[in-house]
Length: 233
Image (cartoon, rainbow, N blue to C red; front, side):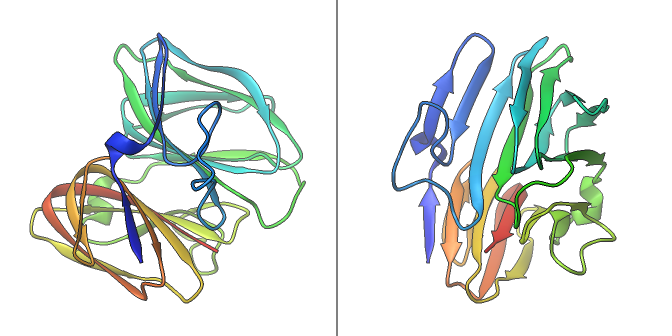
């Protein structure tokens, strides 16, 4: 089953510095049919104005992955971590027993990003933060694990405390790739850019697709595409 979720039908929020689309219920936008997908709880598509951002606030017991699409985001937290994550790269914050952080667009142009929250396999534990560069050329024509709590991904992916993988791929127009989805797993796929067909279902930029009971995902790009996929319980 593949359920397409068009970008124009997602939840919306906008103010003087943030323009957001919500794939799942978040903040003041609530849809009882979209409370999550497997262990995936939040997928926000955020546009953050220059010189603004999310002020200091707290989290606990959540794995929070930030995939920067354009621009950069600067992170600062109560552990003393400070870091700038650029377009195409990824940061992970394991909130654990509790952490406070701020995410600011210190650039002179709009930053766009995906904010992905995944429920951890256990509660508590020491909070942590990390970031890594993921050159798009390294994932050309194939999926690469960007963040993962699954065995075998330790060498290339940022660690998360969840039975889940966050993967990325770039495809040229006409190029194809595939991903095997194990029984009982949930996949959620979003296009950062471009157009693809997934098992014959057409998706455009910033569309989402909720996927289950599809043993193999066959992707074919109909325009140059950048794809992000979460595979979770």
